[in-house]
Amino acid sequence: MPRILVADDDGHIREVVRFALTQAGYDVVEASDGAAALAAAGDVDLCILDVLMPEADGLEVCRRVRATSRVPILFLSSRDDELDRVLGLELGADDYLTKPFSPRELVARVRAVLRRATEPTQPAAIKRHGRLELDAGRHRCTVGGAEVVLTVTEFALLATLLDAPGQALDRDELVSRAYGAGHVITERTVDSHVRRIRQKLGAAGVDVIETVYGLGYRLRETPP
Image 1: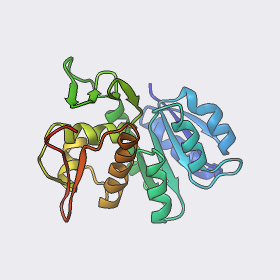
Image 2: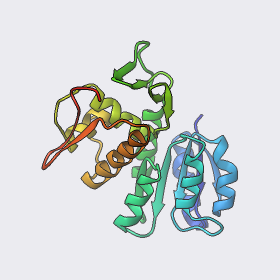
Image 3: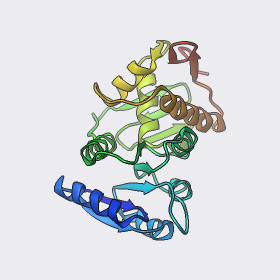
Image 4: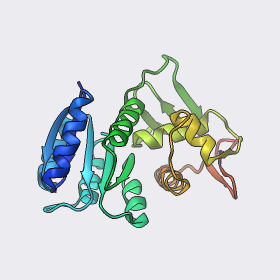
């Protein structure tokens, strides 16, 4: 049974989320502040973090968790602030939901993120492009043998581009191929994830993603 951390300083929100998730078959761990969330984050399969919490806010918790772990992270926020949304995704979150939210939508998003994190892969699921290599079986990205740590969402997007070198993919097609039909992610969210992938790969010395202005992205056909 997947174990999920629900970190929010609002006891009513925690109760609503806990009820929805337990009804869906998940084990739930609660935290009322950032310090408690950090203490619990190492022993769960997914973290749901409120952005505004005492001790350490959700963005800081995300940053510190991402320094050592790829555990999927979903943000909750009472502010529909695009800057918060983009910053959270750039720090490594996998999804973002604004309060008030539908418990049914929350459960659907949790299922989608966990599915991407735990989908079985084929034995020969290694993709290479020059010095860049993705090993889906081990969820491992390397450049010249040195590991580049990617979130579940970043890994899925990069793997999708690697499947079609030189082919321009618009944002909707990129999301559909990476997550399956019916998954809705805004264009700005896709751009944030791609920007983060570029930063990580750039720090490792490779530049493989090109922007197709007015459309989306493509993988450079010739490896650098």
